[in-house]
Length: 157
Image 1 (cartoon, rainbow, N blue to C red):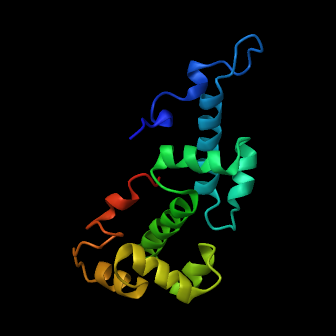
Image 2 (tube, rainbow, N blue to C red; image 1 turned 180 degrees about the horizontal axis):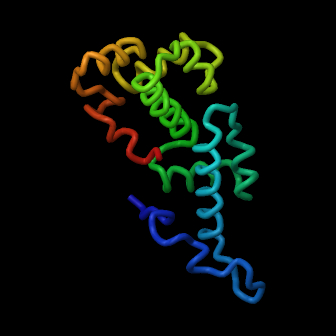
Image 3 (cartoon, helix red, strand yellow; image 1 turned 180 degrees about the vertical axis):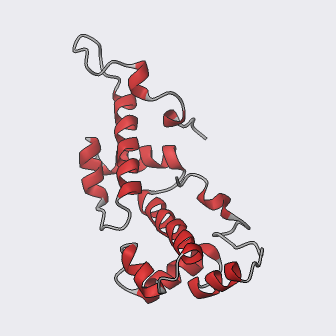
């Protein structure tokens, strides 16, 4: 697995982008921009986000954006966005009394049934069951994909 470029000191600390005399290493600037795209996704996960727009913002091709994004996060951009949404749904289900329909809408899903299917596929139980298990104090581990806990979300901030 390739090292996570953004996990170290910010790229801007190592390269001066303001100095026109210094070259801009293409891979570092692209990785920095992909990191900015990831931060945008984390702040706007409840909106419809188009991957080609993120790639254009990062000033790389769509295929190169996918490659860089996967190097950074370990998954494709849409998978990352889905994980963000489900992680936020888990928090909302345990800390609020909002209806599942309202949670789905607040997370950018137009169809609550689709949201429930996505949630169940990642967590291993329906949103209502998840909420009940947390209210009952059940410490049953939930399945996230093929794993037995939320380490599946480890790259999601």
